[in-house]
Length: 485
Image 1 (tube, rainbow, N blue to C red):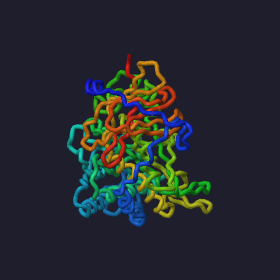
Image 2 (tube, rainbow, N blue to C red):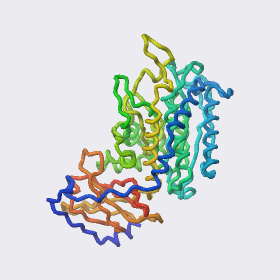
Image 3 (cartoon, rainbow, N blue to C red):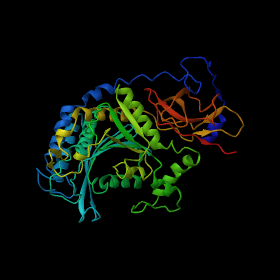
Image 4 (cartoon, rainbow, N blue to C red):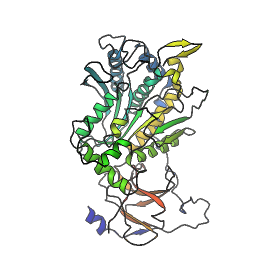
């Protein structure tokens, strides 16, 4: 493949546009016009129902507690009743949409630990929508989750009331709505919609699924967890129903340790090549100065851009941190295994309604109850998720072997990459931005060329290369590594 790329390397030289053009951005290039919206997205977004989300959240809260170690036999109380109800809803949705959603209950035994007093059966409720790449050696997989367990003030209290309306019936309801809304549509990538338990006991359900995914070498291109997405109000009176936080940092402390170790095992994991896989993927990019351009950051930029495009007036605040201080979510087990993984969370948090026993003190109501959830806001968060997932699922696989040719002393930038074998490929795009800017500022479509020269300084800008589909969707950008002399 490399020989083919180099052999066909007649450079496509682009002409610098007039510096006086009012449409130019800070790099001196006039960017491409905005891509047209895909008409298939709006009907799916319209399927997201605030009323159905409210019903789901109230039903889950009515199980009393969904603590991971709570009752599994009752049909009206506890985590067992909750997971069976979620399964039934997803199976009903599959039946209504042609049976394309494959619903499974993936059980495993979690041994006793710091937050579990005895071995406990946990069950991930998983709805899979196979894509066109399903069954291929490098099947593209996108995962979105919410956790259906809950807790009160005492993380070990498996019997007390813990309605968990916001944390995290809101995320579970959003994932269930997405699964039903997207089930009739066909995508290139496989979509996995998960309701997982054990988050409050140590991210246990997500950890098990991510562990199995890495052991099977699944090509998880991106993973989103929706956790505490139910309120647009803060505890100091703040209110913004058009804003959402997106936590994303692909170079977390765990990875820093992995990149500096020769071990081929992640502590506590069964798979033997986890660390090697993470190092192979991330170390070259990090060494080449791409610490802000790891797959997680590229995925987050895509989610922000598409969410804001398809839901005008809604703002996604991209926060370059793996999560809130001393907190964590179900994206972390994926992140720690080298997958691009991010967390959506509401713009403010009211801690009176998180991890609290139900009570009223001095006229203040404490507890995670449905009356403190903004159901229309949850619906909008689900729509942001859906827009990002759908547009990426229709995109080609990311470009491979992206390189920046810095072997000659020149102020231009020459990029090359391996030709894609994707049958939906329509061409390639080069994107760029200034260092310190979160989003891409400029872009240039270059047709089917696999080597281009831009009259832009490689030393002053950050570049990426994308593959474009026939339906107009762009892959996640690939960070170009330098060609050695």
